[in-house]
Length: 354
Image 1 (cartoon, rainbow, N blue to C red):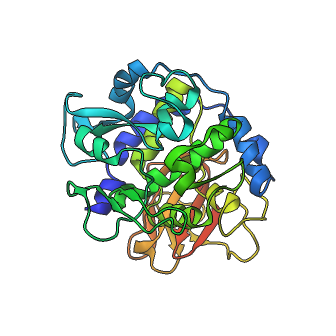
Image 2: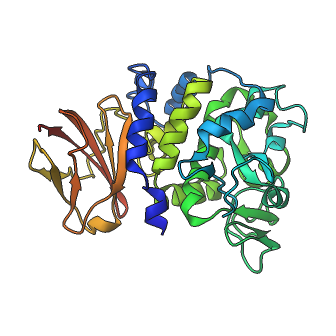
């Protein structure tokens, strides 16, 4: 069920993104190319920080396009209830607005209060119980659970914080982790405002590394275990249409590794080149017409991303048992193939010729 929900409706992806991709300017991330660590994070900040500030009161109408499940209901990561109207739902800040000192009714006062990348339709009861707690692993008996999310005491951020945490479903943990990464990157210029439960648990302050070491470990773990899904790609494109900026950790998941993870200290290459320790992928045939076979350990447990040379993700999924994937839905062109397999990330290029 997890795999089906994470990579479902590939046809919908192509219908929807065909319109949105045309609006993405070439070279969107070029200014970050060749940067590393803190400098890379600030370069990304300079790219995504200029954006259109939306009206918080209109978020419900935005959600009808950013979070509408193609099966005909609002996509709620906080419950399994399929609602066709917004009744029973809230507008929820994934990274709590109080961490930036934004009070209820003041969401439009500063840009992170109405940032659509950080706002989601949320079951009202789950939202109330989530409060302004950090994401984390709930230990022991939860104070609240609806079978999808949990709220309760957590040891995720010991020793500085031993309070409650909000634990999403496994299939959305990466979504929440990438949202946190986006927020602390997009709002470097507001880092002096971080406060409340945020600085008691997750945030260390400043512009880098921003997250405490135990928070980095948890966010990277969730980011790796729950790779970018079709849902996230579609949502990123839809938000871009309104807000005119993107979540770079959805477009380029490897950025998290170059900023906080195993590639820290190495320069990021927008074209997909990796540090020397990563062995290149072997693919055949190349060019491919209908099927591409990749030599990788545990293919059914590996996740692939097909990207344009400018870094835009076109499709994602899991390999078949023989390491194959279909390419007959791609037009004749040169593409990047990014594969997360076990603890490694590998990249190669391939041609499609029908």
